[in-house]
Image (cartoon, rainbow, N blue to C red; front, side, top):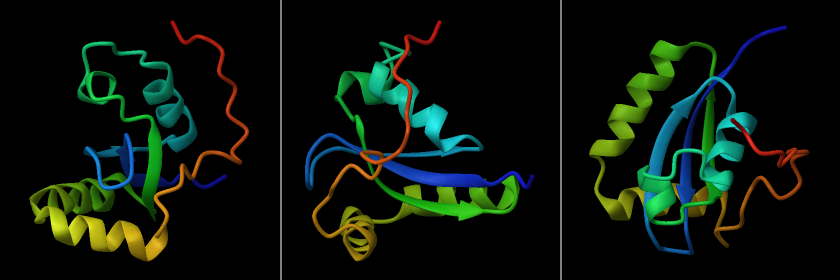
Length: 104
């Protein structure tokens, strides 16, 4: 089974706070954000519990390079990219089979 890496955007409301991250297990990482596993983290502090955008990569190096690039962009560019994929800023994890058991 191939392993993929993801650059993703978490958000608290349409056009609200934007958090950009990278992971090799997107479902588990999104679950951690939603459950606020790290209560002092940026996403917990600003209630960024919706995944509104993601990109898939075949290796971690490519994903990390894209994450750094994406973080340098102006906010308007990020919003344009998000809205191309997800014009209504919907939580893309709604139909994922996430098990919300408490982690840790």
